Amino acid sequence: MQYRRLGRSGLQVSELSLGSWVTYHNQVDASAAREMMAAAFDAGVNFFDNAEAYAGGQSEVVMGAAIKALNWPRLNFVVSTKFFWGLDKESTAPNRKNTLNRKYLMRAIDGSLQRMGLDFIDLVYCHRPDPHTPIEETVWAMSDMISAGKALYWGTSEWSAQEIRAAWEIADRHHLHKPVMEQPQYHLFHRQRVEQEYARLYEDIGLGLTTWSPLASGLLTGKYRNGIPPDSRGTVAGMGFLVERLTDTAKNAALNSLEVVADDLGCSLSQLAIAWAAHNPRVSSVITGASRLAQLHDNLGAVNVIPKLTPDLLARIDQITLPLAN
Image (tube, rainbow, N blue to C red; front, side, top):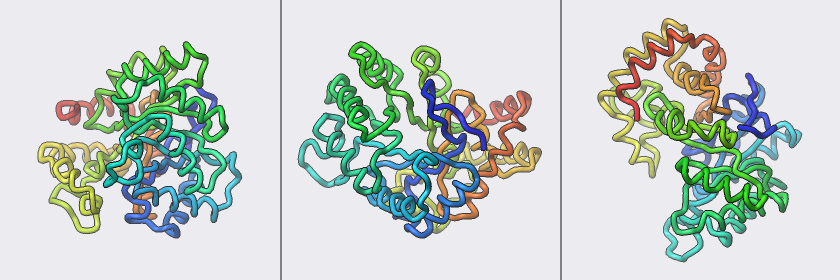
């Protein structure tokens, strides 16, 4: 496992990391989470990603219980969470969800710290942009969160390049803690934002990336070529929106050609897709997910594939996937 600086910061994160979206609490209990986090840590993973909204806060509870049981030295691991959606999707009360105002953010960090049983969170993200709150208010709140010692670095997730630059410039103007990282979706069929929209930000402000969904929510594993198998992510409650993406006929057909490339490399289709995302030097860490230990080990095997991705192989991959990418 290699380690990369998070953008222009001094923090080093493993090139592959382990996330909890969909899986923790929904598919993985505290015991299984502890087992998989231990296996990932033993393989060199030091970054574990979470969010307040995952499983209505229960994902943070599960991860926090696993961290407590594992009793790792605090300097040895990096943990994240994200704020915006809130905990109660059914609530109609204002300031509880879909916002990045100061009132919500100050309460959100305290809740995450309590659920995870930590004194501070390493990385905190604004999970989506909030068009109803001035960016300046959000920037001050996130900076104050760091000044209070409740978080170490802050960033964004799925913000536009214009929004990220605006936040950075406000922080720079007022000598506040600047956004360090962005967490965008990035995989073989979803490339424009990372490769084009953010291009200027890497040099201009030193933006780091912790990318999510390297397997396109499972599409790039190849297991959805014949429909939605039982006990897969596509059958999890609340994940019905993924079904159309997972059963995309053209993209599933392209997997046959990608599998030939994987076979030439002696790796699985999943390993090829993860390695491709990690091969991008702008990516600080690729967040992987797993509901089973065997799946985790297969995903982490991608570290051995990254150095094998020659320019010729990357060109073959582009020829297969670029026409279908957005």
